[in-house]
Amino acid sequence: MTQQSELAVRPLAGLAQRWTRTLARYREPHHGRSIFEISVTVLPFAALWAMAWAAVHFGYWELSFLLAIPAAAFLVRLFMIQHDCGHGCFFRYRLANDWTGRVLSVLTLTPYDDWRRAHAAHHASSGHLDRRGVGDIDTLTVREFQALGFWGRLRYRLYRHPLVMFGLGPAYLFLVRQRLPFRSTRGDRLTWISPMATNLSIAVAAIPLVWFIGIGPFLLVHGPIVLLAGSVGVWLFYVQHQFEETFWARDREWEFHEASLHGSSHYDLPAILRWFTANIGVHHVHHLCSRIPYYRLPQTLQDHPDLRRVSRLTLLQSFRCVHLALWDETRRRLVSFRDIREPREAVLHGPVA
Image 1 (tube, rainbow, N blue to C red):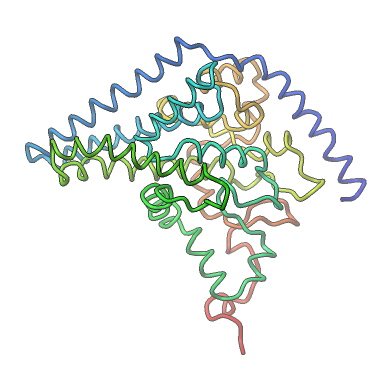
Image 2 (image 1 turned 60 degrees about the horizontal axis):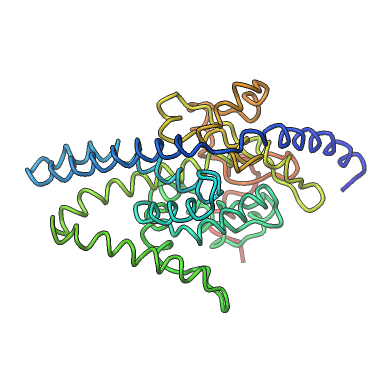
């Protein structure tokens, strides 16, 4: 890292650190508000689920699919509550956070303890090019992509294709990957116990329901809800870090506060979508101070309007992020496959013998 680049980074890093100190006063959760937030999410979700089952039971399958849309929105919100529990900020006490998160994991199909640890690693290394691969979306640099052979490029292109990223990918993640201890290593019991305990809890909850209504109606009701909610969840996680002017750096150029502020978007959604996504769009503030409960995030923007303009993305602008796939270390921005110059024949047919 050159002396000039160090001087350029230090003022920005200092500013981001000052924001962290300023935001610390919003960290205290309110137990009454937290209980209210759970109630207004769980109860409508349960009611919509029951209505969707009634629609299937009486032969109105089309209505059940329509009801799956708002039910999936409430399931996304339940995951956001689980997310706050994982950060230890939904309640004051760790036991209350952990057991609330574990109970919600039965609905979200996300092993709480294993996910919490992977997500903590994501927060600690977000935007660090030398610490990629845990709790984030795989992102290659332009140079790394160009160094791959034909099959490597093809795999990465398929992985980053929208139909895989937001369709097949979420289904695989929630139905397969999170059911098995993929990260399990010798001596690391948590990555085995967490998914297995979650699977057992899901079975305990689902088997009586399947016995009562039947496996077919259960899958017709719950399947679309889970798949739709999973796709929305992956989309939200994607757009929070995969935007053109995000932040990635190596070694000494990486700084936690700077990466948090400028490597996470302010996804400025319409009010109704902000409610269903539990203000997770205020993601730059969340990464700066992850112990702020989601229902206090809007207050940070009201009290500090300067934060509204940092890394701001509207709903319309976010759709343009779909084609971004590679980090250009020279231009310091995410670019699409079309933006990099390479012989078309090398991509389509592989290297010439």
